Image (tube, rainbow, N blue to C red; front, side):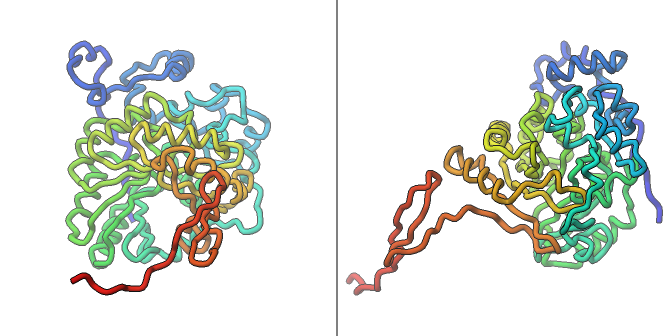
Length: 415
């Protein structure tokens, strides 16, 4: 079966000197990104010969991902645990874009976003209930690369490549096996044929890997094929690219995407430290193109499992026109015990958000049920029982209120 390598050499974006020639344009249309001070200092120290144009070229970022311990050790002080996880007999795969590496704390292994991308030996531990494919995706796959779990929608895994490897990834069985961008056109066509032959499917979610690591022309081909299927009403893209590789959100990409409305995007955010000027600019480009943006966040122990952290993240997202959509209980993949929190902690966080901030900033807390049961919402108890015909309800402050839950008997009609 033929696999095509996608990492093509293309022209770099224009030099920042063009700023003086395009001063009348809005910022989101420019080919370069505002740079946060931490990233600017990082680039000056570790990439002094790299031009602003190169740094803002998403292809350069992909070509220069950090995939080896020697590369990572050049920019952060690895702990013994981290070094053993990467260099030991069962060395774990590693991939971090230079941009995202600029956000890591060089001295603190406990920094939240550092823990999400730098391996530790906890990933080698196996705990009861953990599985390689906890969501049972492979058992719901009618053709390779397609998961049909819900009646009216499918998950289309279009690539096994990500620019960053999240240490808690649900699909770690697929992602991280290669350092090259790949897709399989034969597999794509079989999946598209299945969708076209199944009229019940009205919603297609493109995921992977990360679909936005595909070149524009390959992604455009996929979207155009799906748009030709009459019963496909909407397409969604699941991605972490605006967070870890915001340079990918180019004006050309956005112009292409807006031709395929209704198109939605679910973006994987983890921590408020990810809300940089670069990511903000990427989100502005997508939102201004009319693409509804939602966020999906995995609840992770010691990383984002506090009310202040989640409040800062979700309020920051709403300010950037991103609706917090799902808060996921961490899936029980192999070696994930050190990331998973008790469900009671997630309910505490939900309770600390509900009523204390705008409803737009409160996601649905869910478990994606092991074995393929789908997403099941988790909610604090609010219906406390009944007193006669009154329903007893508990609000966000813990106070009890009554609602007259009775339907009066029908009286005589008015003449």
